[in-house]
Length: 459
Image 1: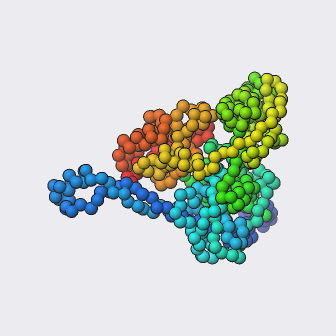
Image 2 (image 1 turned 180 degrees about the vertical axis):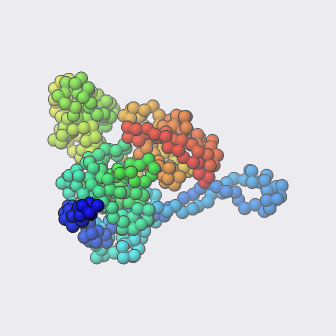
Image 3 (image 1 turned 135 degrees about the vertical axis):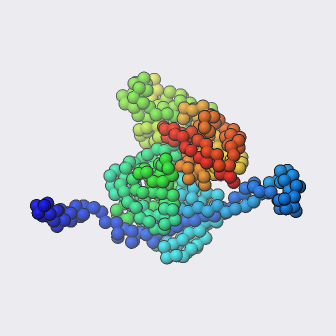
């Protein structure tokens, strides 16, 4: 026992201090950078068809039930509130957050660490990268310093500051788990994957390196429960700032397109096409009349380089094309019939987010909003790319569905064991279930599919 005590005392006196020295100290970073991180709260007025008009009868009157049955529902308004995070990028009041934090908000309030509150103006937002630029009327504000995500290394320590569940200026830390991650329906962002604890309310907050520089915007988590499970994803700050500059100057983001549907080149496909290794993006269809069609690109071509940038995997191509200025001429190196070939191509432009929203909005909203999900139909090309026959896309989620674990970007394949092929059909299926009924949604997330149980809301 005495020897054990002496060994323990030796560890405490000599070994423990040495180990502690190897651990990073985040105190200075939190103290210096915390004031530049803000709480972002939004208010949205939502109309719901519910209730009946005030009747001039008591509930005991026999006419009450008659009029209650046939009286049209009265539209009522209620306020929907949400919380997120953001950070100040200039001392005159510009700040960044996630687009989904301020989406459809009627009012945006920014709260600083010194308890001051400001009404914020949304200068612009970009749904495809999930970046929004806000402006508050203030000067002399603390601001962050931008870092270089390209210099991040896997295994490097990083720190997040935000407002998880409304707990303002919470600091969490972890390491970079991977770089350049592709997520379903998020083709334009090479995400930084970390194991930093990110929870609802952290969205839009900064990810710092140990120098106190912002390297990313915390945007998403992978979760089966709706809470943190060790997989967090941040938008690289260089990609976010490119979007920010366009939003500040024009209020929108322009992106290039060429009009092809692509897939990954597997080892087996590489062998079939005579490639020495599985690289590039394999074209499986070309949109008629698109820039790719006009340039002569064909199905079975493998794009190896685009504008002198190497395409290592299919996920690289949308980012490279999207960041290329519409109207510019580029050279595309392809692999066709066992040999490489250069083709000249003029970049087209992806429709602005506003036009996309207008085109899909009429069919995207669930009429009764009983689940809190905004949905849209998938195009034939999207289904072909995903390898599915049906399914609908979750564009936004809140309330009941968010608490159950449904996420933006999920593909809903079925309700219980009934396949789903359109938003209208989904609404009809949901409408058959009474308040309080449990249903199971079959959801595709990435390459996996899982059933998520959900209780029907009564709203």
